[in-house]
Structure formats: C-alpha cells, structure tokens
Length: 274
Ligand code: GTP
Ligand code: MG
Image (cartoon, rainbow, N blue to C red; front, top):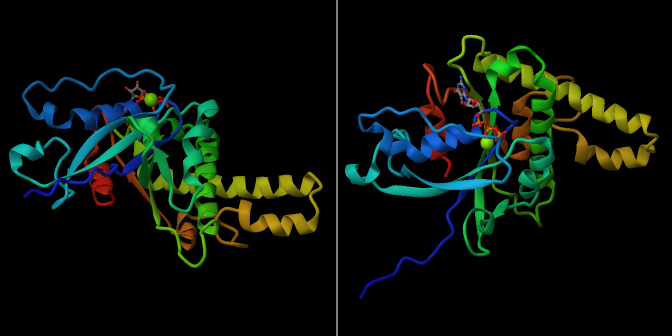
C-alpha cells in the first residue's frame, strides 16, 4: 500500500523591478545553481530585455534555508522544498500585468502563466529588485519608486479587500539592492532611505493631484483609505509603516555578477518564506 503524493501546485515568489535591474540574470544564476559548483565557473548567461513572464522551478533545503543555492540537495540527502521563481518584464508597459495578481486577499498567479494547466500558484513573497548603481545618480529613483509605490499600494489595498474577519496572510517584500559589485552603487541603507523619501514625495504629489483635479471632499475621504500609502498623517514615509497592512519589507544588498557580496542572502531570505 502506497500513498501517492497528491499533486499540489508549487508556491511562487514573484520577481519584480525596473528594466535592467538584473531580474533575469538572478533567475539564471539560481536556476544554474548546483551546476556551477562544478569547476567551470562560467558566467551567468547573457540576458535580454524580458517581454513575457517566465518561471523556473527551484529547491531550497527545507531544514536549513541558508544552504547555498549552489548546493546540490540530492547529493547532500537534504529535504528539498520546491517553489517557482517568476521573472517578470520590467518595462513600464508590461508592469500592470505583473502586479495585477497582488490585489486579492490571497494573491495567486495562474500557473498557466508559469506552467501548464489552469491551477493557481500561491504567491508567498515578492522580490523587488533595483539597480543600486543606477539609483546613485538619481535619474532612476523616480521611476523605480513609482513602480514600488504601485506594488505596495496594491498590497495595502489587498489588506482592505479581505473577506470578513479573516486577515490576509502577511506578504513579505524583499527590496534587493543589486549590482553592489560596482563601486558607484549605493549601499543598501541608502537605497532604503532614498526609496522611502521618494515614496513619501509620491504620496504627497498624488494626494495633491486629487485635490487639484477638483475631487470633492467626500470622495477624498472615501479615497483616503485606498490611495494614501502607509500610515495616515505621518509626514515621513517609512517601510515600517507598511507593517500595519501586514506588508513586511526588508532591504538587502547583493550582486549577481562581478566581485561583490553575491546573492546568498537573498536566497536565504526567499528560502525562509516559501
Ligand atoms: P528587464 O527584463 O528589462 O526587466 O531587465 P532585467 O531586470 O531582467 O535585467 P537583466 O537581468 O537582463 O540585466 C540587465 C543588465 O544588468 C545585464 O547586462 C546584466 O549583466 C547586468 N547585471 C545584472 N546583475 C548585475 C550585477 O550584480 N552587477 C553588475 N555589474 N551587472 C549586473
Ligand atoms: Mg529580464
């Protein structure tokens, strides 16, 4: 008598972020994980601008998420926990599709998007990757923050969209400050504070936009809960304010290629949440 393992759709981690941040490069690095520990340290494949989402199936050591992505879990006899990493295109015209999944109380992504069939994969975490070198010269900050604002606002609305008294599961968000191998890159702490400052500017600008557009006070009040990111009335926006909506944000620096801090900390973060 044998008990067949029932088929269950793997959970997924949604990888978002502006174009050129390094999402596809990271996906390739993790996908090739165990293979690259063997002598030839060939660099990760050249990528090109993504136009459609794609996913790879990855495994973490379920007993010890800090096990390197380079470790072959079979060889180690470790228990593997599988999940899907969903790489999305960063182009502004293709973003809406990527973040549309985040509004519902229990965010899922159609696995037809990531595999066959119509089953739905539960989104366990969001990784928002940024180019910390591009953020250093300031030009990339507004567009990067706009994208993050839209994501966080969706997650906040998700909190309000819950049915009955049951609170939605918390959604962990990792801001992965990439390209720290470049000496021009901003350290993670500055990526965090610059993004927080810019998100604060955006929420003020958007609320003024509503006022300027002649929206009545009643509508504003009704809107308040929906469109203002983070805690009410506080002058400065901080990621910590998102905890109120069960959105738990960490900012961790790393690098996918080059001589930098590497990607292990991100891998561990993901492994602890799938
Ligand atoms: P879209 O598909 O357009 O959304 O971009 P993407 O986020 O998938 O970026 P992609 O992975 O294609 O990487 C863009 C460029 O950044 C490539 O030339 C990568 O080689 C480079 N890159 C990625 N990670 C790093 C890194 O850690 N350090 C450095 N120096 N370059 C990196
Ligand atoms: Mg890509």
